[in-house]
Length: 190
Image 1 (cartoon, rainbow, N blue to C red):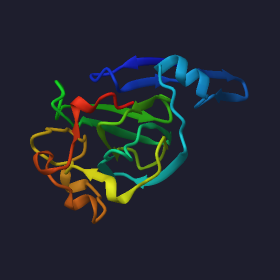
Image 2 (cartoon, rainbow, N blue to C red):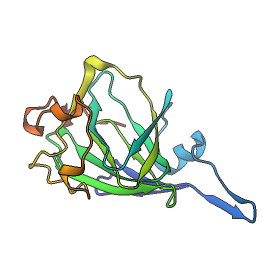
Image 3 (tube, rainbow, N blue to C red):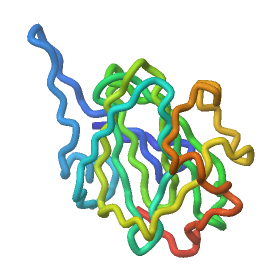
Image 4 (cartoon, rainbow, N blue to C red):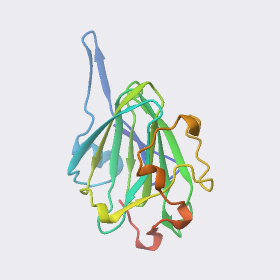
């Protein structure tokens, strides 16, 4: 597995090793010691989540606030998504900026998203199967969110807003300026 820093040094793009032969392929998607060596993170993921989505389904932008904040390791098992990460650490030099990356079953890329970052994705293929590992259980009272169409963020979701499919909950997220946020001085967030 190789780990490459993204626009945010804390957010890492991971490429697991894929072994291919005449039968097909084999990939270790996650091995704790390999993940720790590649990322420098000693996390204990407690839950795996899977979502299936049709083209245009946009999920996000979500995060959990302390003391129930989450780090995530995300990947796509079928299809393609545009994955987006936003720095929501008030006071950070990169506060309010975002990074996006296409994740797909074909490219096999994974994205490590530490605490302090909002996360969302949109399915850009006909369907997708998305998987994410988390190191903290879901805690609804600690949930934070940001509107994906917030003009301050300027995210290009690769599909026009008229094609987005959002849950009722995701249609009513606040703008970044009105959202509850992390405090950068409380770092580290991994």
